[in-house]
Amino acid sequence: MKKYPKEIEEQMLNLYKSLSEKDRRRYAGIEATKLSHGGIRTTR
Image (tube, rainbow, N blue to C red; front, side, top):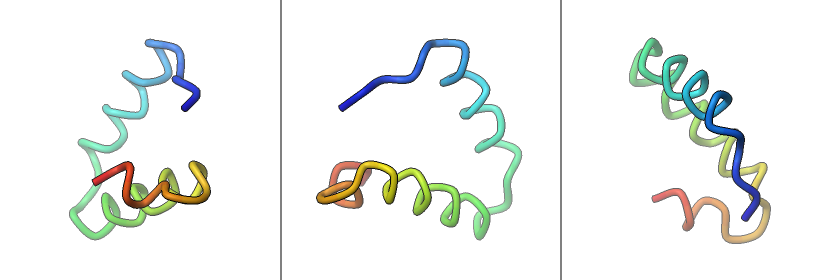
């Protein structure tokens, strides 16, 4: 799995922390989809 640069990971985490629970789930779904097959299982 390709890792994001540290700076990008921090920005993503800050964004995630600012979201409501419903929006966090949506965001996690998008990230899991980007991982393709097995992505949802990997992010849990």
